[in-house]
Length: 566
Image (cartoon, rainbow, N blue to C red; front, side, top):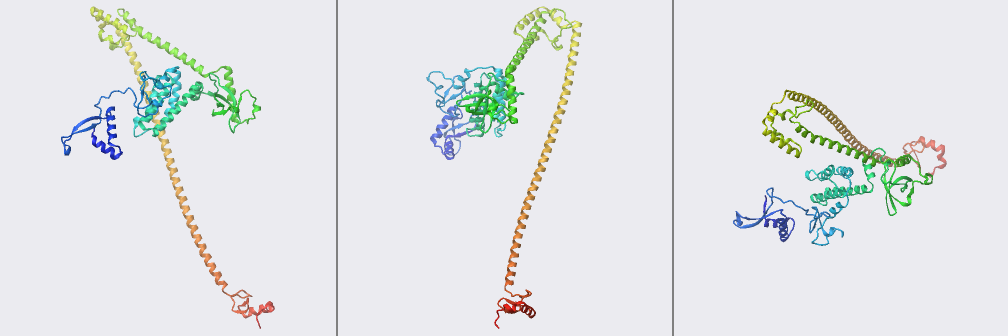
């Protein structure tokens, strides 16, 4: 046990959590009252506290004999502590503010029962039928909590909490649907207490409880629809329910009229489930509902393949209605016949078992018949007093004790048991050989079955391992190819950008050179006749490279247009 002093607790709570010493003292006293810690007096052994008594606390361990709590500490509705009302029939407790006026305590001296206990008392149903329905809900709960494992606290996982309702369903212990709903709420309650109200596990538990309530509401709405939608036999949507659902044409927004079943009606809305491949559900306004007897031509529907399949399913449902083919009634009759046959066969077997020992006792003094199988040879070597505990029925124990007295009074009877006739020994030897051969055959068959099963498991494991290795290899190759492709794309992009930059720089250089050349060209004069660089100036826009070009141009045309003063 770990011991800590009150002064140290005050210092720690004040430094770390900012709690006042008076509040710390109050919380410590409440913890002592609840038995979470034990108050003690210790004497200091060193330092300035040597020989001085100090108030301290120690944490109890396995040496404390904990008393079993009869009630919870936390409200079953809000999962918080405080002043609570204790139920007289179960462990649940509630705050007064968390209860509706119907369930609040009227008189402090009267007994009080919680809402769960009152609801469980109200309804009772067939256990076998109820277990069948609840298995679907529990299996869906297990599917929901499978990814919610908590590696840090493996014993406090949601799967651990779900196992209790699953076990009770398998054992047929539920008496009503309200009791199962109470266990689902208990799962939520325990999860919030263990993990906290804001934890991920608590959110999943709330989702489970919400889904469970929804499934139970669907079950109360129509048991046939609930069973068939989960069991999914062939043509499951075509089987009529008891009572039959109203058949209508329903029109969703953006779609045409479609055949559907009416599940329930509320105000101006109708809950329908459509015929067809997906069997979707929707709330449809009553003005978009038409009776099934309305002519299809008046509805102006688009006859698509899905609509035709839905109408075929509707026709099959109507045929089942006319023929009176109900899935639930067939299953119930079959289940009752199997139950009656199993009960009758079990009772007959039990009757044979209870009657055979009594018949053997009555013929104990008679000669042994070869056709009658005796017990195993080991029981023949023991005395009659050792056979008494093996009798199955209490009434036969009385008869055995009476026979034991007779055996002790008559020694020849004991001699008869120890020295049997030759025919009895031969019969026992034959029985021993017979059962030895049967057991050997059974052993060989089990060995061969085990060998085949082992080979099958090994073969499947190898195939699975091979497929996993191939898958890992393929993923590794794809990953390497993807990485290489990405690297190549990155390199190509870099090269393109570099080439583009070099091209732009080269263009800039060429443009500068071209501009410079143009500038130099503009600064020169050119021969008007042959366009070579000119040396002789004639007039304002005319120059020549040589006298020959000047004479040719002069005689050709320039003498008429020359502006040079003469």
